[in-house]
Amino acid sequence: MQSRTSAARPGRPRSAAAATAILAATREVLVEVGWSKLTLGDVATRAGVAKTTLYRRWSGKNELVVDAVAELFDELELPDRGTLAADVEGVVLQFAAILARPEAKSGLMAVVAESTRDDALRQRIGESIVDRQKRLVLEGRARAQARGELPPEPDAAESARTMDLIFDVIAGAVVHRALVSAEPVDATWARSFTALLLNGLTAATTD
Amino acid sequence: MQSRTSAARPGRPRSAAAATAILAATREVLVEVGWSKLTLGDVATRAGVAKTTLYRRWSGKNELVVDAVAELFDELELPDRGTLAADVEGVVLQFAAILARPEAKSGLMAVVAESTRDDALRQRIGESIVDRQKRLVLEGRARAQARGELPPEPDAAESARTMDLIFDVIAGAVVHRALVSAEPVDATWARSFTALLLNGLTAATTD
DNA sequence: AGCTTTCGCTACGAGTCGTAGCGTAATGGC
DNA sequence: GCCATTACGCTACGACTCGTAGCGAAAGCT
View 1 (tube, rainbow over the protein chains, first blue to last red):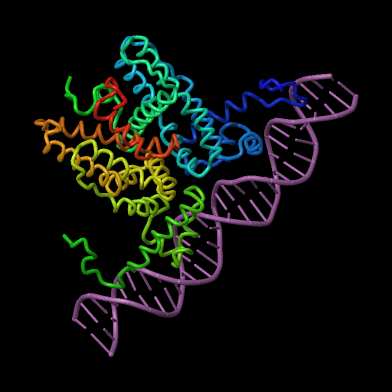
View 2: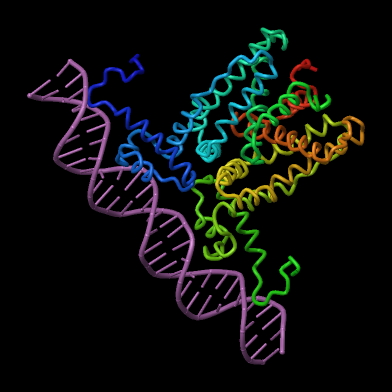
């Protein structure tokens, strides 16, 4: 049961500076040439490390890009805005802010596409990216229940299922708007979406 | 102003059989090796045509895959099921049936990712894939309005905006569920999603 | 010290890319 | 029937990327 922080392994430790330089370089190349034309040679050169160093740490392009993009999601947090509606808008705008960055656009969808044929990759994406987003939604619901805006769910399994549903709706809508429709996810859209999510289609759309 | 059906151009016409063989071969290779390892040489060999023939018709991998995947969406149609809720479930299950196919999974997301850096490609995707889906949603709303389930929208611009919103929500949620969460979009999920979309989050989730 | 692991560098075969060149096949116009 | 025009199959090509191997040097630990 070794400590996961490098343990007490003998030999020269891996340079932490190299890791950050590689991930930063990956994002730069992602912005400039996109995912399909990104080569590990380019990344290594730009990061100032040897190509072999890169291959010692990452097994391939997919894993590298996942880690590089995952760092973008470190900044995610959700301040309490007082109401469920305001919190939902906050989540939407947080997602949108990250997805607006070109390195996230081109990288994220590509690795998701690859993950349809690679279970290990999908799991990696889930842990380092998706779960981090889902945490925000969980937090928002807990607040809403504390405020009495949403009823508490007695059944744990049922609760988890509706959470997954809500998360797919929010994240899916934002991603689809930003990447497929290629329209901006701005405050106006976030407000309309939130109204739809809370009140449903049959209610009056205009507030 | 030439007729778009091949006009009266001199010379040997392009083989229609070759086109269908190439697109079918593209989907096969997509299933077997995925998008990133798909090579145009493989596709040409499997289709029984020369590699040069392929390059004469498509400018690259992205355009080819878009056309190959787009054919999967030909089967889209939406029978009138009598109620708005039933129609929404129909749309959801239609999308899901296509997205469940491996050639759609691996190909569609990949070209969407590439389209973030290629406006022409995004436009091609929109015309041959996205608009075809959106048509279904438009149709469903028209029926609901005819039934009196939804109020008619007087303002055309406002109407178009809400349509885009609804479409992003439906398509986004299905895609996210199927590809990111990697969970099945079955009748149960479709029913839950429809209830959420129509009634909103604040309503009782269990029917 | 001695041991272990990482690093930068160079070089390599294998595979893919997209294109050029050639002769042949299939059309329409005269 | 002949000719101009275009598509087709085939071969070959330089350029590029891939992922790995081998080497000496550097940086840690005991």
